[in-house]
Image (cartoon, rainbow, N blue to C red):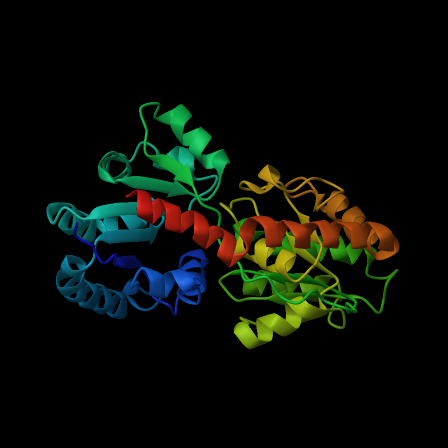
Length: 345
């Protein structure tokens, strides 16, 4: 018998990118699976000027021509719109070389629009395995394109942390400042209760094109003393803010499986969130999270006040979320499932 040395090449965003793709690959990079399957990372995209983006992609092409032939499995981490266009050369090249191909799509509510893109359907047809972020998206995809037989789901991995001890009096938000993230909803909701709780605040970690709107809202509601804007937080800062947060708030309209929610759960921080993406696959209202409807400022204000006043509910939600993080999303759990996928290929 011949023993084949398994080698896996991840293809996706630069490690410098801010988003789910790079976060997921960096998490797997720190796990045992990276060494077990002799993994490497081909970085193809970066957020920068058009010239730098183009140069980065050209470098990716040159590296890809050299690297792809050396690996058995090519694992694409991408989104189905621009991603399938930018990485199309890499996909065709890997297919030409008869490599096993896994495509892991970071997509949520936008999936229905993507299902009719010809490149997306091409990748679905010719990939050996297609992974989505939750069973919600697998079922939706099969309803849109019934003849799919290679689709499955793989949750994002997260490193479970030491559970927090004494939380501070602030609600945490961490995301790019964009309209679909709903950070304005959090400010407006908090403004409704801020006068009642003058020693409480919200911490908005991030940056983006919605920053001027955030500044305007803080001024309009006179929340200068109760809103903190630390900017985009790196890993060491992230640990501090999650470790001390009283609760994590997510107000998004569009998500697949938000990493920020999983990260908060991994610290034992209770979640207040919209029922976005595939969160309802595992989170239960008033048991492992508090849900509020998209854009509903009054509901969110009530949820914020409920957690401030109801300590036992906060403790229950925090504990249940932490257990879920350990049982469903811990890096070791996800990597065992991924290992089976690799072995089956």
